[in-house]
Each structure stands twice: as structure tokens, then as C-alpha cells.
Length: 630
Image 1 (tube, rainbow, N blue to C red):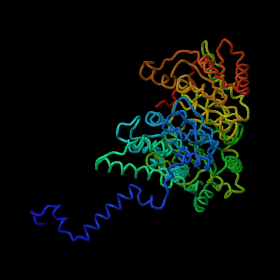
Image 2 (image 1 turned 180 degrees about the vertical axis):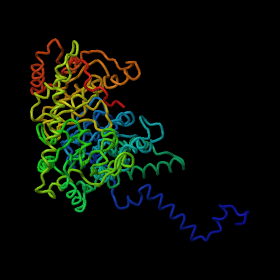
Image 3 (image 1 turned 30 degrees about the horizontal axis):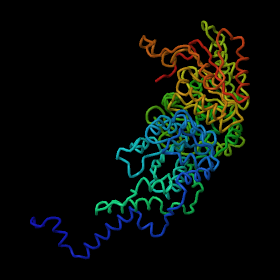
Image 4 (image 1 turned 135 degrees about the horizontal axis):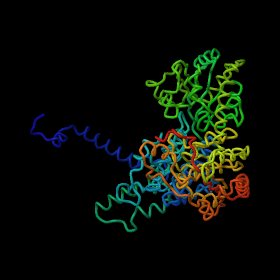
């Protein structure tokens, strides 16, 4: 190139048709971005009183959503108002994290997407922990977040931050809605993604200007008096076209129905390989994780398949209760010892993370069949401490049903099952003996939990939120049926109790919902007793009050010689519940003989429509010494 010719001069040397084509292309791109081309074929109904919140509500209703959990804010008011009008119950909580936890519980128990809506900025950031918990628990949660108007983003608008960057690492899908006509297709896509493959949370951001009616948005965007001067007129032209593009085609009829949900399935060849392995096994075991409770396999169908298989099972997470309370196939204790002896192990939705010592508990002599929807979870730590004989990326529940069909006539060796049952019974006796040991001037927590376990009705549902007390409960308290146990999952989040119980009671109003709290974890959501009262969702909270963060103290004191930051006080939590409209009970060594009476009184209050809290002053035992805290 001649150095004397500048780039701008070069453009002038181009043939005029090429220059004209370039200008035309720039114009077309600008027209597309401003929606000028779309507006040629789609109307802008400037007199319509409708707003984007109505479109959101219509999509949710079409997807079977019956509840939306929220903490109100002006950014999302149109969604809440419209949802109520179409018959979706709007349930407002005292913290945004509670709203997401409630949506998480609703998703797990109903098999549909759970929905929470929160306002912009702090409302959205308050949900981060709950969304991460939903991600690690593989719960299909739709979080709807308000946002500043699109034109005001980055301009210092109230509560305006980059929200999408926060949620991209936490969600399967994140997006912002840019026009009213996008609401329906974006939400349909988001809900389908949340439920497909490995379920998980999704986040959809709604700027103010796509939710409010045309006349209100116009008032905010355009000045009452048209500006003068060339620059002012150009700006006004741009704003008018921006406004028109927002609402062009907004109220045209659109398909609201759910999109297909994808799910990985095992092949016939993979199932047949497993059939051959199991048919030769002398000591098989199945470890069931939360994934087995996911749709499309009903838990009743899965339970029947497991009972026909007759293989001893260890249950974890949401799978607790899968076999009922007294199934001979459910082995509750001594899992490590059983895995050392087993010749075939099926990991059905169970992951080799810290809960299985990263795979170290699996014997290298065992043939391990791993089944999981998620490829990363399927093979987690397999290159370090264990190796699958077969790794199948598939839905674990459907796989077990297929396996049972292929093993018709199979009978698991009874000597193996009996030996596991005997070990189980021996460990249960140790626990019973521990429950009778004195613990100073307080209640023995194991004895308290055994009493609760005896008094649980068949339709009970357990929410667990805590460390040491809940860890003991996992050994003692038995869910009575499938989908009757809710714990946070692999993230181990404290504070799920209020939200999980709220979602559970609304999903299963006929059930007696219990929250088993530690006194530390209670502090995260005790204010939700106000929510329970206002929304007529009576639950029972049992607080294991040992005035300590005992899960941490158990290791910190012997290892480091200090109890710093672990001590709490024996506070009157039952009075807090009373102050929020519930019924409080104090249970201590002073009325230990009335333990059953107190629990029955709490159950009676719950049946009458009033939430109850039992503040149980417990002592400390050595039952869980050496348990995991980090």
C-alpha cells in the first residue's frame, strides 16, 4: 500500500457500488438491533394495559407451577400481581434465601420446577448460597430476578449490578429478557433446561421496562416536550424506536406449553451387562442417592422394583425412606464394613465424594457399577481411589427398574442379607444403650430422638437443618415413606430449615412436617415462624439446644485446645416462636418424664393450624466423636 494513502482515503478509492453495499449492511444491522425490520410486520399496541408480568404468569401456569416464593420488591411487582390473578399462590418470606430454599423443596417433592422471584441487586445477591445449594443438590429451580431498565444499566440506577456474572457459575442457564415478546420463549427454554439431563437451577433476569405496561414505560423513557436541535431529535428518534421494539408483537398468541425434557438412558446392552454381573454375585449391595427420586420414574414403581430385586440397600440423601420404615432390605448401619465385603456394588446416583471418603471405602475386589446422569459426578475421583467396572450415564431410577425386569427370577443370597441385618441390629443396640446414658443435667439427645421416631405418623415429612444434632438424627429417626426426608445435600448448607419446611408443607398439606434444628442453624430461619403463621402452614420445629456449635467443637477442642467461637447460650427459643405467633414448648430434664406428652401437645397444636417449636435442652454425648466437620 502506498504510505501516502490513508485508510480513510482508501475508502474513497473503492468503487461506489462497494461503498454503497457497505453502507447498506451497516444500516441493516442497525435496523435489526433497533427492531425496525421486525416492526414492519408486528404491531405495537400503544393503548394496551397489558404488561410483561402477565406473560410470565401465563407461562408458569402452563407449566403446572402452583406456588411462587418471593420477598417483594418493585422490580418484580407485575409478576407477583399477575401470578396471583391466574391462581398461582404467591408466598412471601422474610429472606430471599428462604424463598429459593422453599422453591428447591417444592421441586424435589413435586417433580416440577420450583420458582422463586426476587427483586434486583441485594434481593438477587441474597439468593447466591441457596442457588449454589440447589446446583449441588441437582434441583430444578427457576430464579426470576428483577433488574434495572435496560437503558439504565451501567448508568447508576438503583440496585443495578451485573447479576448474570454472579449466576453463570451456579446455573445451567442464565439470560436477560430484552423485549416483551421474548418472555414466553425464554421462560419455556429455561424451564426445560432446568429439568433436562442433570437437573439444576436457572436464572432469568427481567429488566423493569419489559415488565411494566407501555404507557408507564413510555412516561419514563420519553420527555413530555419533544427536544429541539439535531442531537436531541436523533436521541428522541432512537428512544422512540427502542420503545416500539420493546413492545412490538408483545401480545401475539404464542405456544405456552412445556418443551420436551431430555433424560439420558441406559442402553439394552449396558443393562444386560449388569444383569450378568448381578446374577453371578454372592454379596451385592445398592447405594441409592438422591437422583433415584427424580422423574420420570415414580418412587412407588422404584420401591416395588427394589423389593423384587431383594438386594440389600443403603439409602442416602433424598433416597432415605425409599423402602419405608421397617424393610429388611434397608441396611442403616455399618456401611463401610459392608462395602469391604461386597463383590458387586451399584452406585445408583451416589457420588464418590467426601460422603464415600472419595471412593476409598470401595474395595478394589468389588465390581462397581456406577450410574449417574452427570458425567463428572459419575467418574468423580475414579482415577485416584476407585475404578468402575461399568460407568453408565443414565437416569438411576429408570436403570434400576430396567435391571429388575432383566433379573426376573433372581434371588439374592439370604446369608448375605442376614449377616448385614445382624450387624445392623448390633449397632442399633449400641445406640439404644447410648440413649440411656446420663448426660448431666440435660436431656440425652439420642433418647429424645428415639421418642420422636416412635411418635412420627405415617404421613410425616422430615426436614433436617443442623450439624451435630441432625447427624445423630440421621442414625435414629427413620422416614416412614419415600420422599419424606429433606436435607441440604452435598453442600451442607445451614439455614435450609424454614424454606424447606415451607415448601414441603405447601406441597404436602396433609403431612405432618417436622424441622429438626440445631440451635445454631435455627438462627438462620427462625423468623420464618412469622411466614408459617401468615400463610397458615403449621409445622413442628424440634431444636436440639446444646448451647454450642458442637459439630465444630468436637474436633476443634481436642485438636487445637480451644472452644473459641463455638459457645452459644441456652436461650428461650420457644419464646421467640410465641412472639412470632406460634406455640412454644420447653423440654428439659425438669420435665423429661413428660417428654411424650410435650411432643404430642406440639403435634396437636400443629393439627389445629398453629406452628409449634419444642426447645429441647440437650447435653453432649460421645456418640459422634470423630465425625466429619471439614
